[in-house]
Image 1 (tube, helix red, strand yellow):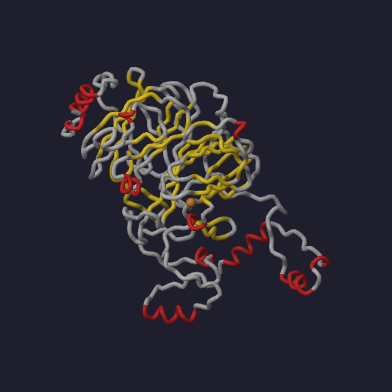
Image 2 (cartoon, rainbow, N blue to C red):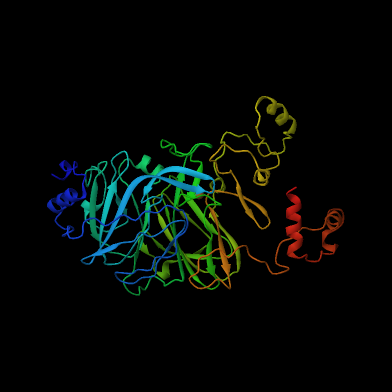
Length: 467
Ligand SMILES: [Cu+2]
């Protein structure tokens, strides 16, 4: 009985059990378990060029990496270890999550259509788990649903999954055991199956980025997610990172760019890009035929969905790229704050401060002031709105990053080129006060438009604003 063999802990006996009960798994005993490759940084790893197996054009996982594999008699072998991890979600803010191989999310699995894949999953969590391979065609018994297709992977056990990656596309992996807790703690990863040959519906691209949408509920000043939260999450993240902890997407002008995004939160996310239109070229159901595509600048990604978007990065600049739910571009905050727009709070704050030092009024003139202010935060807390740009505080956190399109970004180079240098005369600028007064008192049509100031004027004004 498979589910009576859960006492096996050593790799040797686990393998013996596997050989005895799962006929399709061939002789794994020749090499033993592949060594799991761990990662200790949240940095974006460069694309992993395949050293063995069939060639493909690798993806770049935002603030993540691709799992190395071992070829064993023609089978690609991966080893994932589910375990508690420390994930730096943003500089200065480290969360206690559950992940795979040292980070949350786990490493991206990249294989080629038709590959035979063997995945060892070791459970170092404090409770049983499984692994579900979201979107894959596979034998039912490899689907990883606790109780339905297998007994859970007990604490300390290693189980083996094996199947052929039948169709190319963008997929995910996550547990199907105590899902609410295990995904609220960050157990998830991406799976990319590259086409085995030129595919009529899959373009060859210059840059291929992927990330997962995830969400956490971590009280300011603490580090461990509240796992019973169902809707009111306070950290909206990409690959368990929040802006400004999310790396920018750095591309060369003219590059064909593919973005692969999967949603493992409890709500939908309209993902929006500035300055470009994209086509939705695929879902977790597979590539969309070109005749069925239409242009978008925002694509809503529902819970459990994946979307592939493609565009030519032909407009130079630093383009915002974010979830369009505005509270998803903020970090942890108090939720029970009344709207104070137009209410003069200074006197109130002064009296409250006598009783509660450190109290801060929220948004009498909107909340932009929060982004500009250095407020005192409990230790290990990301500011609610943050990130400095060349023109001042960006005023966003959470699900936000920047697409940086540069003419001189070398091919295959993913390094951050710094802030965009706007050509003179191409940046919005303020109307001088005198002209503005004239415009409001006299007929606007007859007032003389001000001459275009240079970029330096804007930067100067912005730094003035930061008194
Ligand atoms: Cu969102």
